Image 1 (cartoon, rainbow, N blue to C red):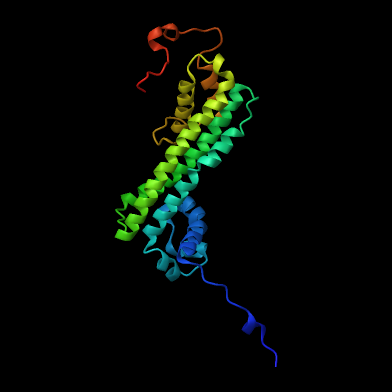
Image 2: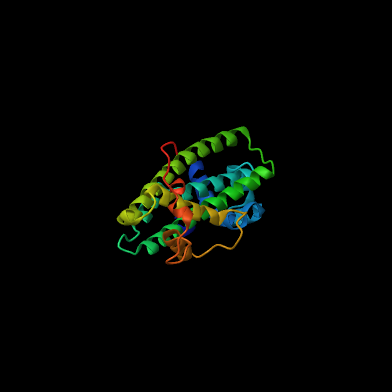
Length: 236
């Protein structure tokens, strides 16, 4: 008597709770990035490849799931090691304008990803979604870890941008820290809801940062006024 194949086939071991949670977060993250809080529980379950009942045996409700997805999205947008590698890959032999354009594009990518997830969290807050005590504690722990990682990423960005600009430090009329702050301001303005005009191409922003707004051969009295020299104070 032979044994049927189905009788000898072993069922895959079920995922541990933490693995199941991580698998669901990874599966639904692109969908939440696209739809935000407007995504339905049916769509979330379909993206995760599970039944809705299974989904909410892992997460108590839709708000708790979306909140964790947003924190995971922010965590992935705050990767100091990957950020360091991206900045190190900027070719130091390129002309300064091209290096600054590369920095602007990188900064826009990081900032845009983080801003997307912040909007999701703000939408949750606006809906007065109050998590259960256990989920509140979990999210508080995630928030503290995320803040520490983002602080590290900021330090990595400042150091990396300084390193990209250093080959031309002797040519700059402002200190390196001021140049870094100018690039940071150019990047941050892209995601402001109050910006006046559409986002400029990175190359245009870079050209304005490097060469300024005045045309060749023109001068501005304020530019030679020592009271307007852009030198950061020791207290800043």
